[in-house]
Every structure is written in structure tokens, then in C-alpha cells.
Image (cartoon, rainbow, N blue to C red; front, side, top):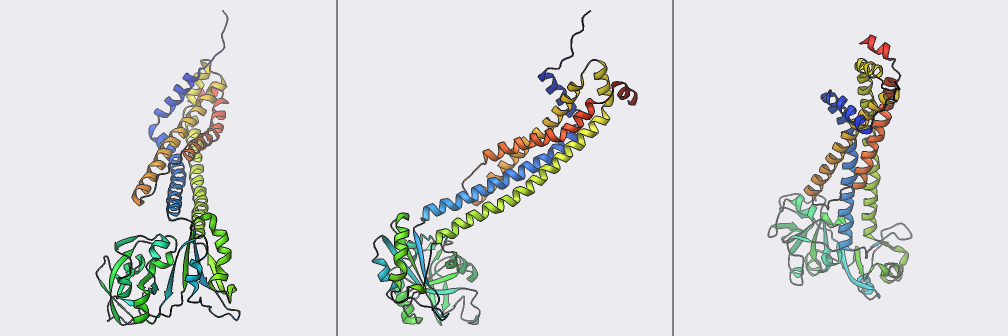
Amino acid sequence: MELTASRLRRADVLRVGAGGLTSRRLRAALSALGVAIGIASMVAVIGISQSSRADLLAELDELGTNLLSIAPGQTSIGEDATLPDTARAAISRITGVRGTSAVEDLDATARRTDLIPEAETSGIAVMATDTGLARTLGARVRTGAFLNTATARQPVVVLGATAARRLGILRAGANVFIGGRWFTVGGILDPVTLDPTLDAAAFVGVPVAERLLGARDEPSRVFVRTDGDQDIPRVRELLAATANPEYPGEVEITRPSDAIEAKAATRTAFTSLLLGLGAVALLVGGVGIANVMVVAVLERRSEIGLRRALGARRRHIAEQFLCEALLLSGLGGVAGALLGAAVTAGVGTARGWPLAVPWAAMAAGLASALLIGAIAGLYPAVRAARLDPTVALRAA
């Protein structure tokens, strides 16, 4: 009688491997959990980072990158310079400039009541400004309204988001004590994305500031909105000489959107660190799988010996245990990818970010899980394949 070679079909390998996992469900679940945590953390970190960055860049696209900020620098002897009172008017005449707005720092404090000592400023700066500041910066008013031609002449103040929080004011209509006089809160701004330093400011109109608070019409900063991004280089070259023709070297020019783009890049760099931590968790999961598979080989020596006695080849035994390791890591990878996507969606929804599901990261995470599983299961599979059937049956 002619003997035929022993063979094991791929479907049989899958079925035998799955059978090994279902016979030890709790152990398999705990091992897969380690891989799932590693993959979930990596997918969630990438997803949350991408969603946050997408929200930041979407807001930047909405506000525009065609904004420049001009401020006085230092004189040649190291003293604080000033901008001439003609700076804003001169800048507005440059071709390509759509709009300008200026703020002037005032020597005054904003307090909730006159009973609070004047030294208790709460870090709130009082600034005189024109009616176009919110429009130039793309700032939104949360409640009330920004200064207009009428309210700029009256004791009316508009609070930045941080200033309103520090003063404990939630809506327009409240009173604030500024420079020895009561001002009515006409509006509260949302956080100013393009210049967060303005969030802790209280804005009053230039006319009332000159009449009541000693404003000198010396702008501390001038904001310039160009017609488009293409006008930025040309306008930037002209700004210093236009704002201060006598001392152009004393003028500092910045582009607020550069800080936001740098912030987005910083978030990406921070993501790399967190990804490293996720990779460590995934590696620990792989060690767990290797440990479980080694224990499984020791516990199932009788099964291995019996299968070898019935004609199974060493290759078939190795394929079985390698399949178990791949299934274990694959299940952990799928669970982790889904969990990471769910965490991303939850955080994005809670914060109002656009949902950016990292499909590529999920696929890469699953592939990494399978690779870790293959590496972790290779030694136990080889060890199982090398067991002598007689020794294995005797040990049972």
C-alpha cells in the first residue's frame, strides 16, 4: 500500500489555531488586551492630534493668513521705542492693504468694583482701540456687540474672553471700574485666535480714552490686513519705513499666523512622543503573547505528541502555533483600532473638532500587531515543532 504525504490545508490551519484560542478564552482575551491597548493608544493619539490640527488649520483658513502685526521695538540705546501717531493712517495708504486697526496700552486698571485695591489688576490690560479691531482680527463677539461709532465715545468697555472670566462677568450690561470711573460692559469676545494676548484685555474707544483715561494717540500695536497672501511680502517690505520713516529699524513686524502654524507643528512633534509610548505598550503586548504561547506549548505537549504520532509534520505543528499567535495579535489589533477610533470620535465630538479618523494609522496598527504576533509566536512555534513525539507523549 502506497503512503501519501501528510498535508494540512490553510482552512484546517485556521480552524486548529482558532480551536487553541477558544479552549483558553480568558488567557487569550488578556493577552489580546495588551496588544489592543497599544494599538488603541497609537490610533487615538494620531487621531486626536490630526483632529486638533485640522481644527486649528481650519480656523486659520477661516481667519486668513494675510494679517501682519506692527509694534515698536527698541531704540539704538536700548530704550522702548514708540510708533508715531501717523503710523496707522500712513500704513492704510499702502497698495494692497485692505484694513488697519490699532491698540494703545493705557495706564489704567480694570476692576470688578471700586472696593478692590488698584494694585489688584488680575493681569488685565486696558487698551484704547478703534471700532474696526474685531473685523481686522476676525474676532467673534460672544455676547453683546463690539465698539461702534456711538459706544466708542461713551464709557463702554468690551472684554476679552480671559478678562471677562477673571472679572467674573458672563454677559453684557455689567459694570467695571476703570481708571476711577464706571464703564458698562458692551460685549465679551471669544478667544482671539490670531493674537491670544488680547484675551486678557479690556477695550475702550479712542475718543473716550482720550477724554477720560489719558490716551496719547500713540499706538502700541497696529494690525494690518492685506488683500491676500500674495501681497504679504511686498507690504511687509514697506511697513517699517511707512510706519516710522525716521527710525524704521525701531519697528518690529510679525505675522500672527506663523505662531499658529508653529503651534500645529508642535502638536505633531508631541504626537511623536506619545506614539513612542504606544509602541512600548504594543511591545509589552507582544511579550505577553510570546509568554502565553510558550506556556501553551508546555501544556499541550500531549496534543503535539499525538498529532505527530498520527502523521503531522513539524511544519504543520509550527503553522498551528504560529496561526494561534497571529489570530491572538490580530484580534487585539482589530479591537485596538476600533477602540482608538472610538476615542478619537469621542474627544473630537466633545471639543467640536472635525473628525479625522486615521485610517492609515489603523491599517498600520493592525499590520504592526500582526508583525508583533508573528515575531512573538515564532519561537514557541519552532519549539513546539521540535518536540519529539515519544518524549511528548511520555511527558503527558
